[in-house]
Image (tube, rainbow, N blue to C red; front, top):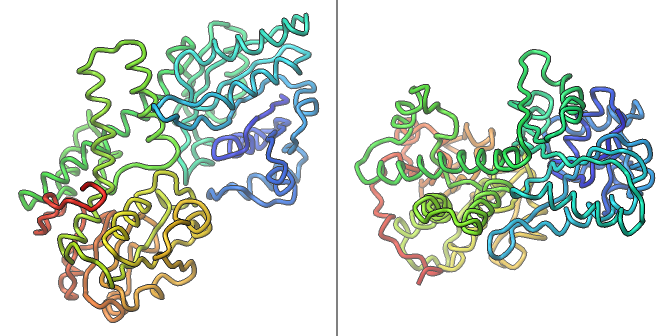
Length: 459
């Protein structure tokens, strides 16, 4: 099939590369000319395990093409995927301006029957919105062309997007046209030879499935972090509690790992969007309160590390420096959107602290976008031990593999105090205590009275 993917980012590029790997002719279209030119040279705009190789393979076999020309991308195209960003607005609603722009452009350019697929995470009703925009342009042209708008939400997690595309947990397609459903089934069939995971349903149900899925996962994260707060109060270990809970097959162990909360481009945006949508259509208040609490707990969770730092080192941190291992919102990505590291830096510097940060992938994003206004932050991307000299404590922010095993002697020798605050519960408590460390984690029963700390930005 000839496929076009509009929007070459964290969703669009892995999607396009995966379709090309199955023998489809794929055109990647983006209005960022520099990004397109770099991709033609093999320069990736994002960091994802396995993506470079998949893209290069597609280019080598002339199956993966990059363009900013709609005429080229739409010529003989059978299926077009809209994978542009839908950032949250000030009120939490999904900003559909990019989706709308693509829809109008399709309407102005379409010349043959086309399946238009909403791959971007969009609210219920977007398929009808896209259909209307395309139809408006066709009417302006006084032209009639058959087209169908389908909802096909993505379920790719950053850091494993390629794997999730090549081995999808499920494929959800919303359409009321049986022929379109069958066409989409054929497209995805090569990815599901071992186990059929194709779910056809109504368009609204498909659109809601994406939001409901991500909100459910966000709920599990916020819930286990609430249990972590309880665990600290009663000197219990949340890891043991999570293991006991997760052994129940009705609950399962996935997403029951206490940490610094969720971040990235999906969960925060989707929780906001479902709250906005629920309020807009008049969902009763008790349901809305449940959704809101997910977000409230997560926002609070990102302040747990600063609270523990203040509880241990005092409210005045002027002249004190802290080492951060990790800046991205999760391991194996350079994405810092909604990262807990941003909140940690913001709160600690507000109390006068200096920060020395290490991250193997996200330094440039931190320096140029997310932390550029913070002057008391220095960076290192090659040696995680280099930043420890003169620091009061080490703070672990992401679950990056290289942080799981440390040279305890080197860390202890470099730090001014043998203190580790582990926001990901990566390290072994008995081993560190034997080595003489003070170790504070998330819900592991430490004795700090952090829950009564009021941070400067809250005052």
